[in-house]
Structures are given as C-alpha cells and as structure tokens.
Image (cartoon, rainbow over the protein chains, first blue to last red):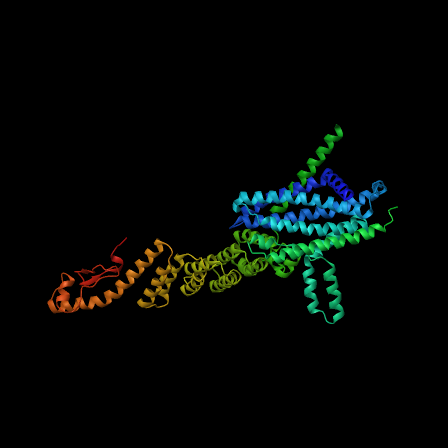
Length: 255
Length: 285
C-alpha cells in the first residue's frame, strides 16, 4: 500500500509539473468564459446554455487530460528506463501500475474539481444561483474518467503512446454510442450476430450510464438506484480493466 | 538584430496581405442559394449520436444559430425549413422551454401562408405540452399567441383549458378562460355564474376572490336586470311614468319584495330609460 501511495504521489507531482495541465485548465476557463458570449446571443434563460457549455467543456477537457497524460506518463517511465530503478526496489509491477493509475486519476480529479468550481461560479454569477446538482453531473464525469484512465493505462501497457491515445479516444467515442450497438441487436438476423454484438456491447463500457447532464440542467429527479448502479458499474469496470493491464504488465518485457 | 527586423517585416507583410485578401473576399458577391445551409441539416438521431452525450449543447448551438439566422433580413422563403429546425432542436432537447416559445414566435413573423405557419405553431406548442405536461407557462404562451397573433379564440381557449388544469397555474388564467369562453363558446349566464363561483371558491388569495366576486356580481345583476326591466316597463305602461323607487312596484303587486343584488343591496332605478341599474355601473370595493 505504501508503494502504491508513493508512486501515486510522485505521479501526481510529475503531472503537476507538466505544463500541459495548466494549458488545459486555461482552455477550460476560456471556454466557460465564452458561455457568457453565448448567453448574450440567446433569447431567454442564459443559465441553461452556460450549464450545457460548461459541462460539455469540462467533460471534453478532462477527457483530453486523461487520454494524453495517462498514455504519456507510463510510456515515459518505460522509455527513459526510470521504471527499472523503481522496480528494482521492493515494488511489484502491479503496484507500480496501480500507483500510476491513482496518481493520474488524482490529477484528473483535481482539474475536474477546479473546473467545477469555475462553472459553479459562472452559473451563480449569471443568475442561476448556487446549483449543487452540478456536482452530481461533474461527479459522474469523474467516474467516467476513472474508467477511461484505466483504459488509457491498459493501452499504454499494450501499445505505443500515439496508438494508446487513439484507442483511448476510440473507447470514449464508442462508449458514448454503445447504446446503439445494443439497439442494433434487434435488427440483426440470426442469433450468432446478435450474440457477437451483445458480447461487444458488454465488453465496451457504456459511458452514457455516467451522463446525468440533462437531468441536472432540467432539474429532473435521478433515482438513487440509478446512481448506485452507475457507481458500481464504473468502479467494477475500472477495476477489471486495471486488472487486465496489471496482468499484461506483469508479463511484459521491458527491455 | 537585422534578421529579427527582416523576420518581423515579413510577418507583418504576410499578415497584411491576408487581411487584404479577406477584405476582398468579403466584398465579392457569391452565389448563396436560399436555405443552402439548412439543406444538409442532419437528423436528430445523427446529431444525438455524434454529440457523445451532449445533446443539450447541440440543441443550444442550433438554437443560438437559428436566432442569428432568422434575425437577419431575408426573403420570406427563409421560413421554408423553420419548422424542421425547431423540430430538430426540440428532438435533441425535448425540455427546451425557450426553444418552443422562441420558435413559435419566429414562425409568427411569417406573413406568407399564415394558416400553414399557424398550424406549425400549433404543432410546436402541442409537442411542448406533450413533453412538458407540467409547464403551464407554455400552455399560457400558446393561448396568448393564438389569441393575439391569430385572433383564434377557439385554439386560445384549448390552450388555456390545458393551462388551468396544471397544478400551480395562476388564477389569472382561469379569469381569462372564463372571459373568452363567455364570448366564444356561447356560455349561458348560469354557465358563467357557475364557473366564476368555482373560481372564487378555489381562490387562495383575497385579490382573486374579489375579482371573482365582481364577475359574479356582474353576471347576477345581468340576470336580475333581464327580469326586472320588463316589470318596470309594465309598471310604466300602467302608471304612465317610471316608479320613483322599488317600494311603489312592490305596493302595486308586480313584485313580492324589493329586489336586492348579490351583496344584498337594493338595485337602483335608471329614470331616463326606466330600467334596473346594477352590474358594471355599480362600483364596490
């Protein structure tokens, strides 16, 4: 546990030193500021547009951070051979990977919290008052990122950084449209095709399960059971993918 | 130093050329077939798919674009795809309150094929009511739009009826509904009295109760006048003059007692026309 924590803290510090994080943060703040511009162009309530823009912006920017940083930070350790120094200490390979995961997830979540604070401020300033339900939407963006970072770690172990980024991005895209895969099974003739698509559907995370933006923006009720199952689904999926990554990393030739 | 200056001059020159080129392009008229931008508008399903869970944002962007697009002066044909655009926006975000109201407002600007646009407005508002059955403001807007823009009280009444059935809708809607229904739907005095009594009994504040009472007073006075005026005319035919007060009429046996209004006050007699006076002509607090 101490080894995981030490690697996580170190990864967090390393990511903090990376200027790319500040760039993304600046971009997100600029995006939220542009909400004001869209607010001027609209007729009616500005708050809805600011919330929509802000939540989509937050999701997009933390996704970029998750995709790029996750893949870069692991491969960097391997490329620069620093991984040998770490693994020469009493640190198991799986501990190294789990530590990396939590370090990266922390930096993503810190950004998420900062961006959420900015969004809350904007919504408050432009007439929406304090909107605590926004925390629900951004909280589940955090859960979505936990799954995505796990995939990024898996791909960083399996392949090269650029390919890893592309694959993680693909998981993000496909994860948001996987509902349609499920709908596709209704139209497929024969049971083989249906089974294949069903397997594919369950193998890819349905990231829409963590999407509560509409409910938050329109003040719709969200059943506690939905939140609980979504949380469980995200946690289990991230754990599963991380296990696969650890298993692959254990047998990986780092030469 | 010299290299820096040369580089700077080159950068500034290139920037200037690009600005000049952009200015020149702005000044050249190009073929711009009407509705070109709208012809390739994707379906709601496609936009939903590509929005990656941000349908609300896509609806916002389309909504903002539509406001800018329809704000500019353009020929009447600009309304060609208007319903499609707002159908798309409200498919992406079925709870987009402002989009329904603003979409209907833009549709009402059309002076060509008014009946067609009116039907489009009705379809948009009906969709809004299906998607937001608890939103009385939409039904109220629809009612006012039908009444003010199209002078269609029948549709207006339909929307106001829908609005008053929504819990939390303000009492003023019931008042307007009653006023329009009296005119449009051929209500009898008894229908109107019954409706206003119901409004009074369900009012939660003094203001609306007072307004309802005033309406009830007016209606009962109209009903009483319809009975009392012939009595006064008979009395006048018999005596050759108008009675000075109701006691004379009672004494003659034409009435069993002095007639009183809704509040128990005696009606006046208008001497010049020899008729009972009540209703709107009597003020009360």
